[in-house]
Length: 185
Image 1 (tube, one colour):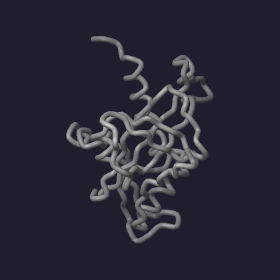
Image 2: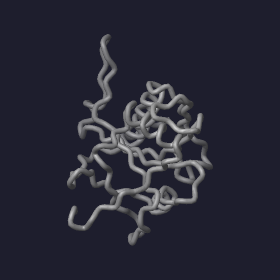
Image 3: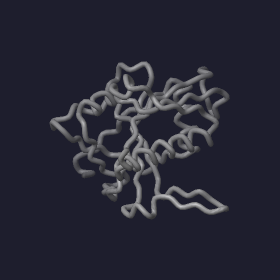
Image 4: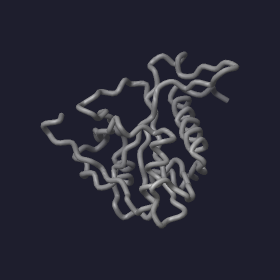
């Protein structure tokens, strides 16, 4: 068996990050099967009431498409520019007809792989941060392979952000993609 490639390691760290955040938030997190993966969902998170400022739903579910990158994100205004590869996946994520909402979570890792993770008796440290964006309602791509998307810097994928997102879903508030105006680019 061959050792994991750097891209495989990045991917595995994104799953570890997702699972750690969901677990710390008191939510269930599981990896999706092959068929859901083919439809743009790598993982699923389920949360149960009570939700802070929650709505009438007592159980909500969210599907996640995970990405990880060592490329330093370009900041445009208050958003990161991210080249999303795979137009079929992009179209899966932007669909408005899905019963279970989907988001994209991107983990930005340091460029030096030796800095990705550190541990001691005091801490297990995974460096950098993941951010999320809903592509629901985004415009169709005019490209065949890559679509530039914009991820708000305020949408950190952390315990607080995930709890807020799930509370919104319990009120039937499903996030949509916020288009970037041309003068913002």
